[in-house]
View 1 (cartoon, rainbow, N blue to C red):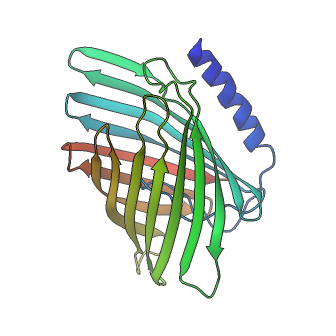
View 2 (cartoon, helix red, strand yellow):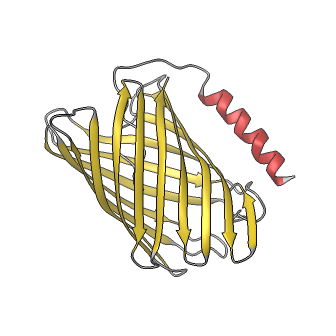
View 3 (cartoon, rainbow, N blue to C red):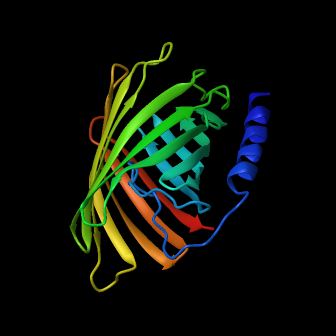
Length: 248
């Protein structure tokens, strides 16, 4: 029953967010890093970002198919985000579980974006919706706020930083989310970029500290492909993923 509600909700959200779309010159997705970029979609622009991931957990393995994020420019400086998440398969010991984690919704807004400045700031507010599969749902509406910053070092390089806070809800503890991600566009291959950085999650339930890296390639002005990986130095766990971002 919970899964049926999730599918119906996702279908309605897709219809709402994809109702009016336009093309624009270049694509600037939030994939594939753990953090998010400062770029806010222009009005009536829509992105579909998706991917797959293998996660080598300490007690087993996990496969994620989907990683679906829909983004739509609502008005100047404001975008709506719908996180439809993934279909997850976990193999732990001799047990296999599968299902869909809680989806979510969010809003990203421009805070500071002057053409004369190398610094850009945005804010992101999100809320998870407890309608995922029974084994993966948190059973709570969980809000998170994040400050996003980007500083251009040169025409071909920049550093992106996120500082986020997930509020304590019910039995779920509060958590701080921090990421720092330098990125570089290759001089001889301007459609290709590389990034490497750090991301951490800190809460009373336990900490995660990732070293991550990846490659992005703009196959077309409306299509980005990516591969990415990360290693949790705290828990000695590894993930490898690939995906795409498509602009409508």
